[in-house]
Image 1 (tube, rainbow, N blue to C red):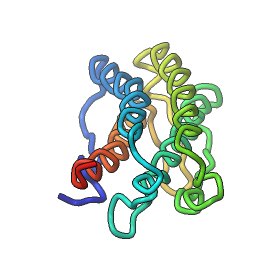
Image 2 (image 1 turned 90 degrees about the horizontal axis):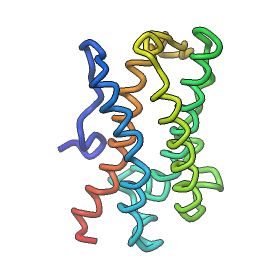
Image 3 (image 1 turned 60 degrees about the vertical axis):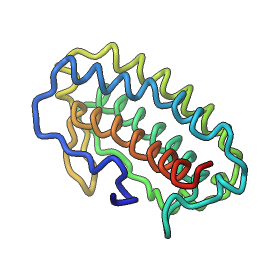
Image 4 (image 1 turned 90 degrees about the vertical axis):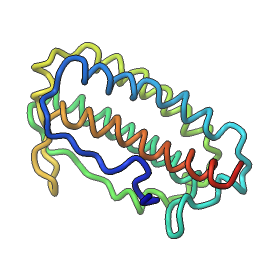
Length: 172
């Protein structure tokens, strides 16, 4: 198994259906509680352990999920309200070493819980036509919201698996 991609890389080349969108929304909805459960019994020393050699610590992973969730939620809102906007990317690696990445993970868990509650409410109001809306990433080009929905669900599960896999492998 590739430690960088414990659940594999995101791939989707099919058609978005209502059932698939609902499943991805459910994954986004469930992430905060799964994440909270995954880290609740970890010590600071365990949280400060990288999930792989050269990788982020579990603490940095949790804070990254908060950063990514905030940015993803805003990208959805921008695409719905501004019509194919060019979004502002962020340097995840630089964000992961800023001073706020040393805070207790509960600070980011609270953000994730709040953002996901709002994000899921927004997503559940979408029609299938809304998933055809898009934004433009300066480096990646146009991204339809339907594909970004799938990526967002995968992204949360991907980082959750970084945590749960290390916990399992270390018998914590």
